[in-house]
Length: 140
Image 1 (cartoon, rainbow, N blue to C red):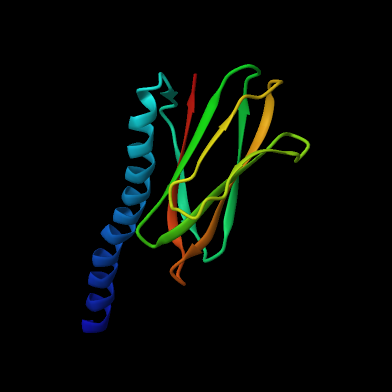
Image 2: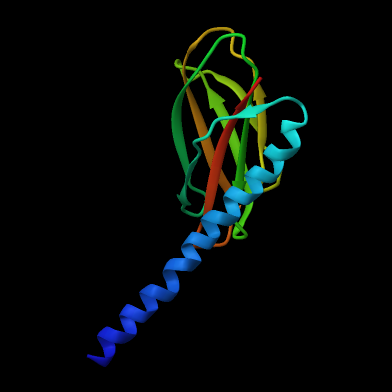
């Protein structure tokens, strides 16, 4: 019984920490977004987030419209040392990237046609247990 109680308490203690790191990633991305709003960039209400393994990545599909300028902003939590964004069109041809060594990558693209685009968020460097990310998309 004591062991079960200890495990239950450990789960309660660990749960807020996971939320805190997601919140850190989102806060980093939204700090950049606030600065970009001064350039008349609007941001979608939704955002993507998750936990990436060390040196891992995830790819998000979204629709972008021709002639619209998009600004993709990601943020990593305190465990993220280097987060990158690479954007591909529907044929997996690269159309934009940010590979600076930082935890808040920003990519600006203006598609020549409307369609499905693939946004790869890559954790290039972090602590060994990985890190959380958040991705937001702005447009003008």
